[in-house]
Image (cartoon, rainbow over all chains, first blue to last red; front, side, top):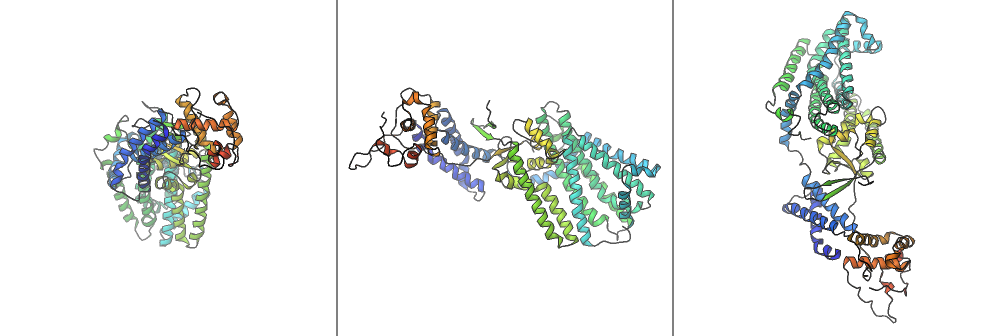
Length: 330
Length: 267
């Protein structure tokens, strides 16, 4: 069969395929005729093979290739999310954290040990804080927590701080994660440095006699914020781990698998940090709540975070545990 | 193995689809364009919310956060893989099997942009792209995505009609295809170029210049299986075959549409 006859025979099929694809791509109409797509698509694929085998013109091949490509994207693309899967994420996230328990404890140690060490150092030797933080910065922090008790700031200022916490903290978490790509070194540095900084300042405030202000301020949102930073560290270390020790996979494949995990982790981290920002802006800094109330809410928050991460979604860990299979859908 | 920067994927139906992957310079331009838009939006919004005082500061920081991290994600997920910058450059983000980019992959590749930016000015991403066969930056590697050139759905150019000519030797299907491609592209070249190309096939046509072009178009028509052109309407004098090329093809073949009398090739 020569080219013109071939085109004349099949032109109607191709036009039909194009019109069905247009409807699907614009997502304006969903009707029965869309069910034709698989048949039309397979027919076009068949025609494309014929065109190639018979060396018909490049223009015709290009046209059929474009139709086949569009059909392929429609048929084999991942379906958009169903809301039920979003609910599943609530349980998948803690299960994934437990499946990566080793990395979790490693990240916790990388953050907490420097905190304790620097805290102890500053308690024993108050001037040690200036080796890490400049005197001006220290003075700034001191003034922040000295005034906390006496002045109530307005709702507008609360909201401004909320914006700041979202911008600043979530960006830090994202960077903690992303810099893990360099063999985990970036994550390591950020975790250790933030640990030193936090430990040093906390210990310093004990000397500066604003200890109650600071601890009562930090304790509630800290449950979400500090845990989230550690979890961002887990994601970063997971990326770094894939680069350093890809195991049975090529580095590219290991990285892709790690990427699937990390998307879950970072999603969870983001939600936790939004919760932390709400608490930090509208609860932790409220002067009308007595410290005792904040300590109580803090205890509640820590318990909630650990119960959630420790118990929610039990039985789902298996999906994430084995490095070989089944693949974690990104 | 080809020098072209194309990636091929075989579908379950057994056909190979090709994706022209996009290189660093054009992606850099798209990135600059997007960065410019983000900065512009931030400035404009900054000016507007400055009027709102303290609440405005909070709003501004929220917007800045969303723009910084989710500008690209929004467009890649809801605008078929193209941010405004990419769409301007005709680029598109797809999964590495050619299917539309998933939300998670988009989030991942855009968060890892931070890593690609390090230590300065996208250096890490640029190095990775230069080393990788598919020009993937670090974020693309982890998310399993590709950036490809978006193709326009162009209709194939028709082959200009001409009296079919049987080639003097048996042509392979590959050779016949080249002749059809030549004929369908004829309207896009100027006359000199069309004749120069036809000149290379002197051994096949035995003529040069305009007749060679016409003969090649004739062979292409024969390949397509076209019938003899109908005889032109009778005039005072019998019209010469040269009238048969359509105006644009005739122009490409180097003669005014009214030219007559060129010796015609025959089957």
